[in-house]
Length: 314
Image (cartoon, rainbow, N blue to C red; front, side, top):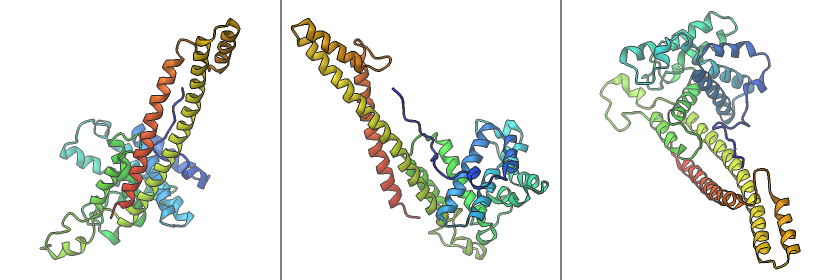
């Protein structure tokens, strides 16, 4: 029995390698990163490209955003490993060091003429629309648009990784967390300070970009459903075959003549697949039926997630 293979991010989505063959140099710098940060950077770069598609941005900007996304955490190559890979929560002092990856990444890009165009992604991807981000505490219009895209992709992938998602079931809970970041914390409070009044209209991330993320997640959920349905077809086909074997076995047991018994036994043998035999086919049939029930439930749950996502309001 084979199992359906599913990458959490849609494997049919656009890849930076398909957009431009002259950027290998830029991507080589990712090899400086630890494996987990490298995977995260690749996921963010891919998501940036897909968000750009739904934002209806041109190809040139899309490529730029993808490369910025790939390189956004490059400054982490300069963060001490004991802080970068620390399994427990960082201390305040350690977090201050971690936050320097933005300026470290910016400096890395600015010191390399080929990476210089992508420095803004490294520097600004932790800025927030309401001014609560770092390193400069910029607000809405001061933050480059590409950094706003990266921020949404970065937060989404960070949540997905933290929660160890291998399926899009319950992914709406992660999107609800992002919705909170799209609204100001003081949304229903009186603003006492004049300088906070303007910021109160914004949360940390762009609602427009978040809405596009919803569309990307729906695409990926539909892709997962298609893979599960392919596996369901495989299961049904094998259940039908094993049920035919079982019917032959019943007829063989009921046959009174040896010639008939041999006939049905030969039919069973022809229908067996590798590692199947007269002794274990009942157990295999049971496993297939159980797997089919699980996958049918999974498809129901995934469609339910899509319904929830479509109803989400930003």
